[in-house]
Length: 370
Image (tube, rainbow, N blue to C red; front, side, top):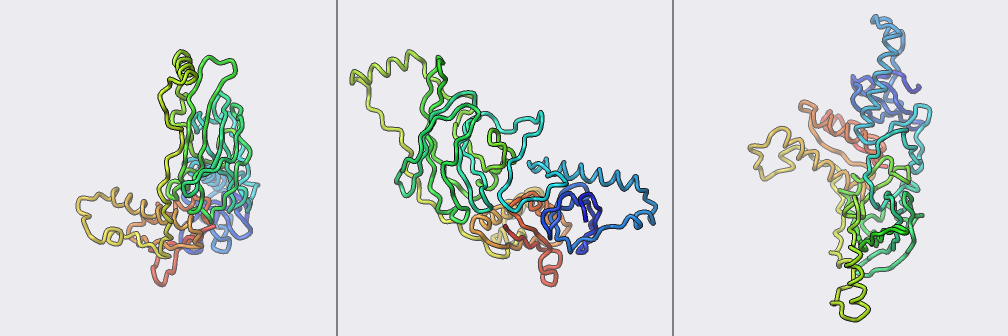
């Protein structure tokens, strides 16, 4: 079984092309040139060339079909915001390797200052500050926990560079992470502009944390969870030289008005992340038991169901659940197909399959989490 082989799923009627060998037991299959899904090797069978010949399909058309499926998989990966892996390179089981930038590829992340968290292993993250600007930056890094601040690092960061690891955090302790506090002061040697000090405090939430994943972060050139630190990425607020001179003179003479120190506001107590139930029912009557569904279009109903799905999945990942079942029903298959598209693009998913057919039929999906 190799990349490019056409296979048929034993658990259904779908056929597709193998686009990646994920592990000894798992392959990635492009279905209908539309989306890719991970499938166990034992659940697919290679469609023999003799079978296509028996139905009058030439070898040339088979090759053309494989090429179309490969391009379809590439389009699906591009739409998901990830770069498709090379056919000959199996997926590593350790943390994601650096992703080389494509030649002449457009920069998807705008210029600015960022906090990036990269995988050192599947469970361990390293924190970096990324200076994706044309100016040098002086920065301090600290952490705030239970209202107490502790300074940990102070350095100069050159333009278009990233700091060394400022700390290492475990995903299993997500709800216990401290709030990072970063102070940033851009400057330019021999420049004629002074900039204001920027203080940024971050509080991570599961729902937004897992959607912040970027496949190819500038400077680092690898996958990372990315959070912007400067509120005005185009250019920091400039201080007019004459105003700066007046302020300094007033401070030296003691006539400057009192100004509170620039400290981060006291955080609200962090709310513990509650694990979702093992079985999540996405039927409309389960999501809105009180009723009030009149006037909802099919699009609005689908969005409501997908929002509930993403919330449950993010909480399951944040609380280290091993598996979760989503009950979506059979119907016309629209919700099932949308869920499978989202799951196939999520790298935190080990695999997914139809769950307990004797109980749910084809109306539920079992998701195994890494």
